[in-house]
Image (cartoon, rainbow, N blue to C red; front, side, top):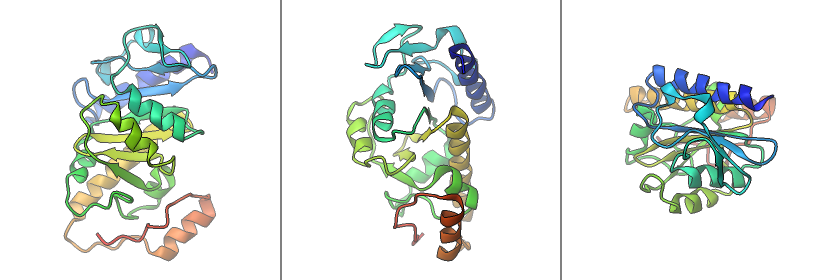
Length: 221
C-alpha cells in the first residue's frame, strides 16, 4: 500500500474516532509503522478530526523527524509497544470516556482490567493491562509498557486512556472501539451481578480463533 494511501487512512480513521466522540479536542494520537522501519505519526496538539495527510510527521527508523509537523509527545509510548509487539504495525491511543473511567475504579485487576463480557472483546482486544499513572509524554511510561513484555496488545493508562496495537491500522482502531464499548458495558452493569462468559466459553473462543490470553482470565469483579 502506498504511503499516500496510508496517510489518507490515518486521517480517515482519525476523523471517524473524533466525530463519534471517542477522543475530544486535540487528544489522542495514531502511528503507523512503514516497510522501511520508519513511521507516520499524528502531530502534537492536533485534533484527530482535522488531520492533514501532508502534515503527518514522518519519522525514520531511529525515530528522528524527517518530514511533516512535530510528532505527538507520546512517542515513548508508541516506541515501547512497537519494540515489544513485533507484529504491531499500527497503534491507536485515545482519551475515550468509559475506558478512562474504568482505570479509576478500585477493584480493577491490573493484569486483566475487564472481565470476559463479550466474544468480540476477547477476539479483538484480548485481555487488557493497566499501567500506573504517568504524566502525558513521560518517558518512564515506556518502561512500564516494556515491563508487560509484549503480552498485551491493549493497555489502559491510569487516568489517561487506552493504547492499542494492531497488525493493521483498521485492526488497531476496531480493537480500541471494542475496548471502549466493553468498558461502557462494565460501567453499566457494575454492581448488578452480570453473567460473564464462562471459562468453558472463553476456552472455546481460544481454541476456535487461536487467541492468546493470559491465565488470569477468571475475574472476581
